[in-house]
Image (tube, rainbow, N blue to C red; front, side, top):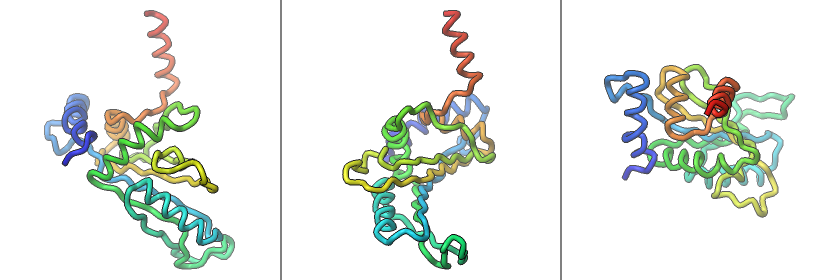
Length: 193
């Protein structure tokens, strides 16, 4: 069963991208391949916090996270080889679209003084968003949480360029921050109207 965002992609996003970039084949139109949620913690943190982070990421993603472990021992950081230092979840398919819908429509607007997300991509059409407070997600209760936890949300697309990736995510409704040139153009249009 297709989710609302999957239907939106096939019905609205694909024709819009075909028109803007001139794709002739539907299979060359960029799509979101996966979303990776990643959260790290200090090597010196206690085991209760480690379990807390795993539980919270599991609630947000809807599936159990995988523990990431240190590959090397680094004495300056009190880090030992094979010591847990974070967790991550990879979402694909319906779970990915469900998470993206919650992120765009519920979580991002819950950020205080929200003015849009940065527009910086990695050069290959992929986007990474850092979230400093995990309580913006509706699955997490802000009451009784003693620790604030951040995470990285990496959206991996099949776009070849940053412009294609930005347009793909903008068509999905990701609220990108307006550049100063866009703000000036909007103000000039409003002044003349």
